[in-house]
Image: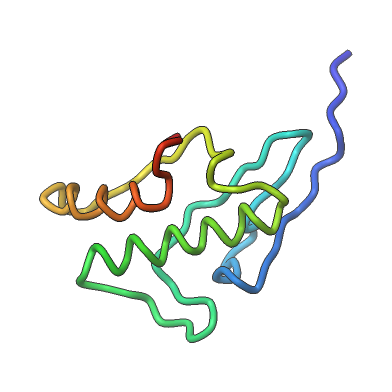
Length: 106
């Protein structure tokens, strides 16, 4: 029978608090599952709208804070799923995304 290490809930005040019955992330064994993030500033509660570059930067900062709270770095990320309302903003989003994931993209 397969046995896995107990799950560990990851929570940091450096990323927006969950607004529903979910965690910022869950660590199970050596895997980390991060919940979807929005462009919300954890200190002010402000949600960035309008400028996709500003919004993408905030989302990446939130993900980075959660990943680091679990003891990992962005270089450990193996998969990201991005949802864009307007595909015309893809190149601007991708420019910021590349700044965070650099030479080791997921």
